[in-house]
Length: 433
Figure 1: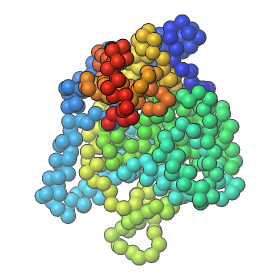
Figure 2: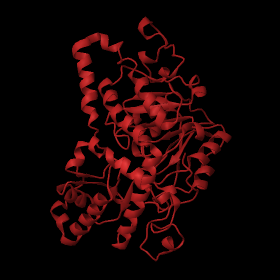
Figure 3: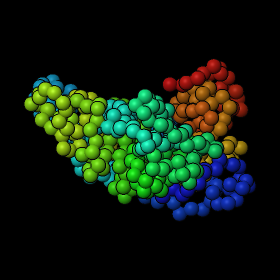
Figure 4: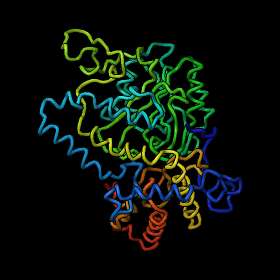
């Protein structure tokens, strides 16, 4: 589980700055910054499972993880079932796929079997949870940071018309949010705290443990969006006593689009009656009863219409590889690589808006460069894939299958593109992909 310390993050600085001097800099000696060589070798042996790595330096895993080779087999299995079993496929795996696939995610989250169900995306999930709630004063507040992912904000902002009061916790530096400031915003008027575990722009890890404890102390719920943590930052929904957790498979889980997941603490489940519902949530769906919903007693009460079966089949390949690799091993390698990258970037005069302390930093690092979208495009021409976001520059995200040489090549290319002006022909670029 995350043990991120409280307090705001500090921007990366060049060697010799106060950040490096106080032990928070990339060059600082930390037990967690080294990954055992045998473990690194074991993880890198999995490179052959990802076809794109044969010709591409793939460092955009925080946006779209590389596709596992086994996805071909999973989708072929789905197609063969449809082709040969027809309608019988529903009873032979399609109908239970939201739970079957969810059970793989449950292992990654340390959740009980049968407590995770699959949806299409996080927006649907957050809307479904919002539909379970009544925003009645005085307990009608929704509290989250201004650095939440915008899609999540849109869902909760829409609840204003149902009586929700949105409390947005400010960031002093655009990197993270002071934990005590966040805790102070959570009071007896708070209904739910839908926060991002790892912030998408800076990779700042929020202190879930402290936030959950404060929310529970005042009677509020916590819904953690773990999109940028699951699969690269170890945590346990049980150890954290999380009420709810959600995320998607597009990024670190390498599961592709269309496979979002929702965990709800089993003892909380019976209290939730979503207005966003459908026949899969009914206790007897094939009775085709008319009238009001009769919610199933298990986690299927949190489903709605028919599942996106092909996406769920495809996603399993990525989850199985994450379980094979082990999130603890992934994290150790990630910390070592991102720490090394920040150090080498600082040596070349490139600053970062990512937290320097690896306990506060997820799997992504950022470097400040001018004309970042154009640099992304120039890198893509060299078969080096990264991305950029406003206010943070380039985002670079090695996963368990990436090598140190690939990170070095990326940094060399960034410096060459800036030095040569190769970015200029893409100067009007606003998005590379």
